[in-house]
Image (tube, rainbow over all chains, first blue to last red; front, side, top):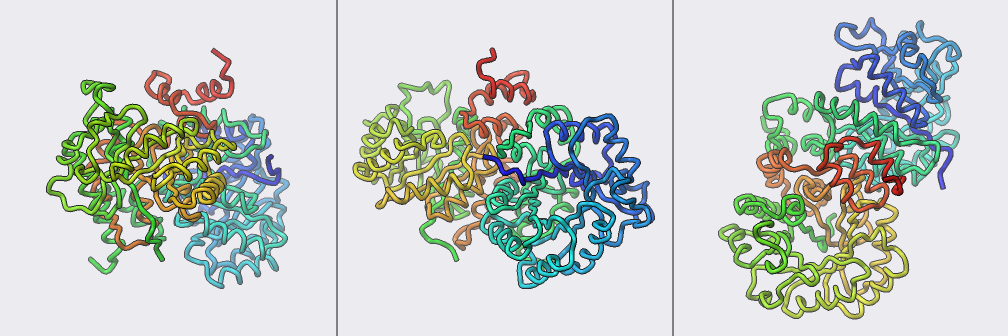
Length: 316
Length: 316
């Protein structure tokens, strides 16, 4: 019953890092890597390969930089078939320091880009492909970019880009099953030589169902995080996704244990999930920035006023 | 863009009552009724019309009994077009005390039944229809009853039952969009003279998306609760559903205010929502009973052991 081509990418540490300045300690990252490996997940993404000339190490933890040596400390001594992924932001990577894939613990480098930046993304991605990495382009905020410019970008990717997988990224958590179906079909029609991926956000409690919808229409690369951790409303949960898939290679138990031991305590320290201002941002197809600011202020639970501001942005 | 035939039924007090012995105080119920009315919701369900010869008033609050006088105290002085619904369980209603609809504050009486009890449900429901009430049959635990017995039950309902609406109830929170599509189409094919309803549970974070799926395939009666309150994983949230629908008669603001003022504090006292044992019950198509027992014990967060027991039920 299972579709062998389906690959799961756990981005717990990468997306979770967006709410703690990528400052997970080594012990925690190793626990996640160990559990994700034991669960049979195909990829784990640890963070961003940013230059420390651009971001300060005083401000951010190791997973903002994902240096090969730090990654080696994560994987050392842990049996695993799980491949390592990092994100490489356009214009923020020290290309001099990126080794050929065969000399690096990293297997995959993913590039997140808006439709308007697709030219840059293609050039950027091809550099990593040339070094032997598996690569993806993750098209962000796609709920805002569904016009003809999207088809144009996809045609250009198909013609010029070596990326293995092109992701639909629902950054604003605004899509539902009909819009996901439409997008996956559009991607599949144009991207004849590439796999399609899906990365959901859970503003409207739709990240998991949208991921199922993407599977139904033949997207084969699917992102998820343990217990849904991630910025704002968080992501599709890894445990629900593994529970849904029928591939016997997946084992849910290490993830359940990880949630009990590590993620329940963590959730008491940092916030993510179904929280009304993030839901409202999703309904209105807005970046969660305003909602995140609200949650950090003293009116964090004044939902009605937040809504009034969303529908009347001219009100001061 | 909106479909006028869609009716929303808020069952906050009824389904929420399952986790507090139906013991909401009058002030709280009036606040909910006021907000739901101001939001333009079509129906509100307050509880069960059970006989107090069967259940003790010492053990249960007023909304286990839903006497007309108690309902009058809720609605008194509040402007509203929202109709009042209660559930009438088979064999638990004092039929002598049910007034004709024209003399009662109640507009709709719903009967929840398993497929195997459909004969009783039809007889039971027709009594209320004869008294002038709008009626529904809510077919429970439908994820376990998808064989030919379901078609037979639906044919019998179509032939013999006066109920206006027949609900698909995903009691175990096990359905996803393909199973919902299949069921709604099956219901629509057989029930030519009735509306189809959908009542989801949120074990797998799919209650809202399943409700959207039911809408897509022309179910017109949809249940939801404020902030998803309900037994175990809870329900489709009213705020997401109203946010999704385009009917200008709905106003989200009173519900947002109600969540801030009443439901955030309540959620700190009683538990519902995305909690791993309920998710596991949903994955395994099980009643949440075992998960609810776990949550009341001292191993409430031992998810792995709970899972091991689910997959090996013979282990003592």
